[in-house]
Image 1 (cartoon, rainbow, N blue to C red):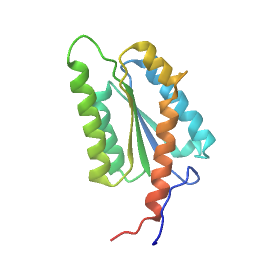
Image 2 (image 1 turned 30 degrees about the vertical axis):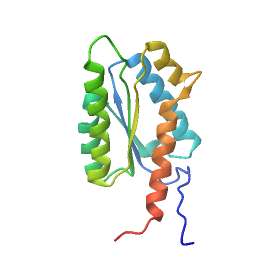
Image 3 (image 1 turned 45 degrees about the vertical axis):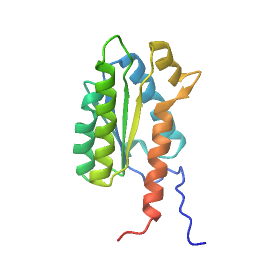
Image 4 (image 1 turned 90 degrees about the horizontal axis):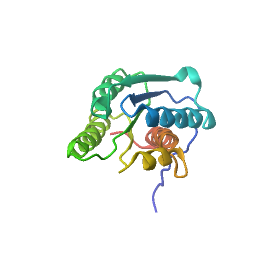
Length: 157
């Protein structure tokens, strides 16, 4: 049957960078809070985590790329909130942020996690940032740690 590879959510020895969008800060600070709780829960040392603030979700990929290329981090977690409005701005920003974050991970080989929520309303955003729907910031950290541990197991070339 071959080998089965599976990452664990054990943050021992994992170095993380968090990139957080300041736009919709009432939501993103809650995502960050959830991320920090998960960092604690999964055993990542506080001194192994750096945080960079960017103006908005559109700017997440640029900062994430710089951090990934620095070779200082095992994974990058991008946190943001793009709330649908009355114009197509939402569609452009959310799509480009997602595409950019994906490209960072693909191009650098550093797991880069899309922890950007894209709800229709502020209430839905708050529900996903520590409310009734959990905290997507915590989920993003768990994903990052799991990917780091999985990639450490996978064969290279």
